Image (cartoon, rainbow, N blue to C red):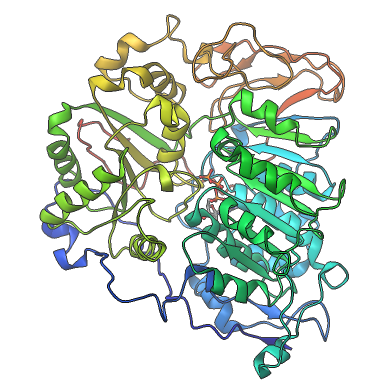
Length: 628
Ligand SMILES: Nc1ncnc2c1ncn2[C@@H]1O[C@H](COP(=O)(O)OP(=O)(O)OP(=O)(O)O)[C@@H](O)[C@H]1O
């Protein structure tokens, strides 16, 4: 029988429709001042519904492994049927995307979800999620995971990496759930209040660096687990452990967690054991492998009771410095596959990037001018310090702008409320630090503002890429405006190259930072392949060398010579670089691993659309640039 979690509904967050950007707004257009979401709770959290307690489908498989439909939950998870079609997605560049794979085995990409061998229930869940065509990273990861490989997958922000691992992993497990999963009380027993608490013995563990991201991945998992026996749970810091224990002790097959809370739970063997784990996914893997997390990370990988050799490891990110990739490989099986969509750490052409020179003392005025120069639209404003978040929040509030804000010193309840207000459009301006830079996926974020550019010692160009990646997601268009001051010189060179790579306008004050050879196809970025390391390095802590095979969102790059040389020498042919000239691409080495760059297959639907900006819209940002 099917049943419910008897927790109350998480307040449903309806995402507001996209707004057409036009010129000249005033604070009035942004709504009334009382829309600001303020946080000063004097009451306790009693009765508060944490995001991690959101409703999930529960099915104990008494009458078969697939449960009946549940229209009410279906609507909660996937939205109303008429709202499920993807809108405004520009997939026009799909045929031009370079995908590179490295490893002993060649992966044959899927062209559509229908030919991915998915269980009909999973296929339905994919459809109800509004996915019509697999993105390039999904085209490769779905078959690679199905074949049982460890995996390193790198693809741009907003390119569907979460589903690239959730769909194949959950699909693989759903048919075997009964056999693999730990004993647990039945839904009936729970409803009758006579249930014995179970120990959580997840089959899948997904670790990610922030609470907001953990909640978001959990919400994706809730969709793909719909009508299956797999029970997803999420554990993150800040929310009461007691509530999370309650969820875990009803049984847990898919655990999404932040590292600190996961380690805490691992210290309670009566609550959690990792002995059944079959898949361990590390999302935002380069961040997780950072020194700050190293101790936690090692504990998670080795401190559990996972059965040696029984666990598949998957690492996902949009950025992956070479040094971190090397470290990552030490955790994976020799037979692991590496899939890369475009250059590691490249941005998408869908994001228009403006950089505006600002006197540090005039930043607030510049921000107001910028916000008023365009029609209200959902915007994230990144700053470098918690104190500055508070200060800007007060400043914009005084200007009667509907803002909310978030940083790591806020309580978890404040953070959840803030994200809800932002997602729902109640507070369409979010001021935050880098805590939300990675992974957060909110529909219709049309504008990202770097009020402060990231410091090189705190994430540098990688953080810039993650921050601007909050807009222009999954084929949508977006605008990123960055305030540049004289103090930002250290990031200037990498920033200039990042702009050049996707053909952005280079402002005068950055001209001096253009590389000598300003042909974009010859940009010297971090080396893309792990097979051949350059000797001379510069830049972002990694090795930077001869340009790789173009970027993934339109610029063609290397193509393999004969296409049949997996595991042996493959020849990279000169290729059009998308800028009108042929570029020479370094040939991969003959190391027995093989490297192949190819185009992602074009699916049945030309879903990437027309390549034009939001119909009829013109943005005029602070620097008066036009978005064509
Ligand atoms: N095939 C698809 N078709 C349409 N939408 C999709 C598809 N795959 C994923 N999406 C949607 O695209 C959005 C971005 O996906 P996701 O958050 O997984 O990106 P990501 O690559 O992990 O980004 P980031 O690097 O910023 O974490 C999500 O809203 C997701 O539901």
